[in-house]
Structures are given as structure tokens and as C-alpha cells.
Image 1 (cartoon, rainbow, N blue to C red):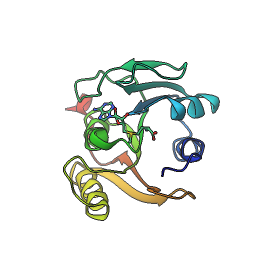
Image 2: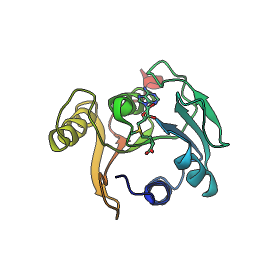
Image 3: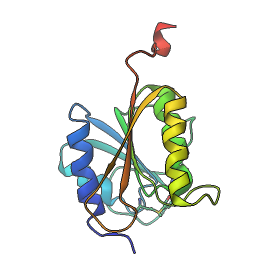
Image 4: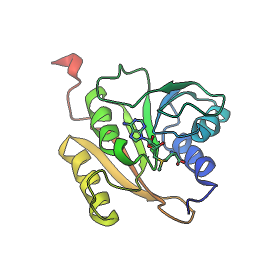
Length: 157
Ligand SMILES: C[S@@+](CC[C@H](N)C(=O)[O-])C[C@H]1O[C@@H](n2cnc3c(N)ncnc32)[C@H](O)[C@@H]1O
């Protein structure tokens, strides 16, 4: 059973760790509860998910892919399931930060190896990855990634 406080806790975490971010993409956002919690904290948020029924938030009713044009400073996902790996790859592609609270893997991998795999994926892409925890029950580990200062921007190449 997922902790109902997860959206507020994660929104507070995101604003604390990315204080300069103004625009966020909320991936696999379900009903849009994380969007609402981030919006309350001053961010301009667009949620991506396929649900036709959702809260009254800015919502792109489609699956998120790497082809999505980037209009965010940080990309976040609470229990984003099949979109988790895409978030890490998208952050690398567009040199923005990410924060994810992984849950189920996209390939049947158990939780701990899945967490290790995601951290290694980010590191292998040149991101600086750190792990944190939210004070809640259930899947509460957070992976945060930031573009490495050493890696040249695609615009510089
Ligand atoms: C476990 S639910 C989590 C929903 C919400 N974040 C929450 O914590 O309640 C996983 C969600 O991922 C969505 N999802 C999976 N792959 C996605 C993708 N590529 N783009 C957008 N949403 C995706 C599903 O539609 C589903 O709503």
C-alpha cells in the first residue's frame, strides 16, 4: 500500500534539492497529485500519463517518451514504473536534473537490483547520482541525478 503522504513529501524534497527549478515535468503522474503538490510550492508543472480521468492540473494525456521536447528544468517521477528508465535517459539527453522514487521495474528485476541498475545507468551517462530516502512507508528511496559539470553541453559540441 503506497503512503498517501508521498506526493507532499516528494514535492518538498524536489523543491529542497532543486531550489532554482521553475518548470517540472511530472512523469507517470497518475491523477496529478504530485503536480498539485509541486504547483502549490510555486513550480510550473506538466504531468504526463495516459489517464483520461485526473485532477485539474496541466496534463499531457499521453505516454512520455524520449522524443518529447524539453520544456522543464527538472524531470520527476513518483513510482513511475515503465517510465523510470526513460526519465534518467531524458535528463541526460537534455542536461536537466531528475528525481525519481522508483517502484516496480520495467523488466521484472527485484527492487534492490533495480535501484542499483538505475543509479549505474545515470552514472554511466555521466550524471552525478545520489540516493536519499523519504520518511514514509513503502518504496521510499529517491534517486537524484544532475548533469555533471565536467560533461560538455550538446550546444557546445
Ligand atoms: C504505479 S502508477 C503511479 C502513479 C502515481 N505516480 C502515483 O504515485 O500514484 C504508475 C503509472 O505509470 C504510468 N506510466 C507508465 N509508463 C508511462 C510512460 N511512458 N509515460 C507516462 N506514464 C507512464 C502508468 O500509466 C501509471 O499511471
